[in-house]
Image 1 (cartoon, one colour):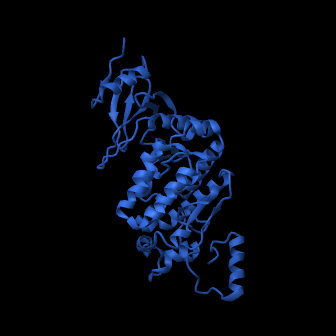
Image 2 (cartoon, rainbow, N blue to C red):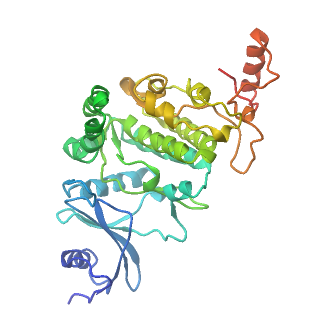
Image 3 (tube, rainbow, N blue to C red):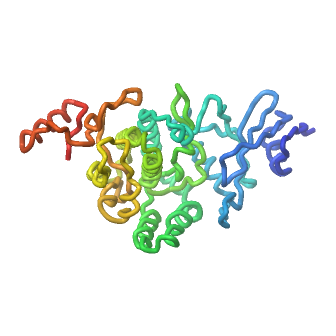
Length: 381
């Protein structure tokens, strides 16, 4: 006899039935809706012995636009989570049970008082560059583990789903308001459809990452997972860090450092299916070129991006992955600073030329020497 189910507020009857079938004899369950999702109904369910998270994919996303997507993406997420658990078990939710036909998955639950979305942490001014290294390391290991796997390539051969969730709404949708970028965006879309070498997450961004004070980050929401271009995941995260740096001007240098650590950690494990090159030139010159203020906090990079997003120097900030697929990202110099240290001046970060800097060959030689020995003033381009 099925267990009675206590609900508040009431979820759909078919969702209640799905939970009862997936978790027989473990009720009654208290359903509590969770916020944050636009593509799924997400619930916290609490029973006598366990607390879980339940996700049900929606055929129509909860956005203003008429955006439809197949509910099969829930099954793709479940498959991705099970694969990721073989690489980093403690950094993804555990799949407790799943119903592919109904688009429902029961996952382990992360207590909000212990875990915080990375986006929330950033928006309230919390910056820990070490998180960038942890995320780059995780993403690199996931890509490396899947590269060249014919079984995974067949299981995640779902380009139509990726088109519906990412390429069409984001890239081609942007051409409606920015017709002058149609050529560039169309080229990016075509490269994504053609260059498919690893299993990608498809939504690797701060909103889908949970941060704990003493544990490694956890990655959520892999509904866009597909066999695709590794550059997409890398660029997706870096673009979010760049946008946060534009919005949170007082934290921009820490966010640049976070992005640099993410990039370097990813390179350690990046799939060796082609040449890898990460460009870090031009960013500092771009960051400072239109500024008349001396203090690094006063710089607003919004205008250079708006006026030059399809032209140099923006086009030169790119991460080149196998077959030279390029995406824009915020290049930067490495530093030895930690977030709990104060930065007395921009010179410490290598963002401006010290007043006492020598000229000519002696200047370049001294600068290179400091860079090689780990000095805190990076070489000035």
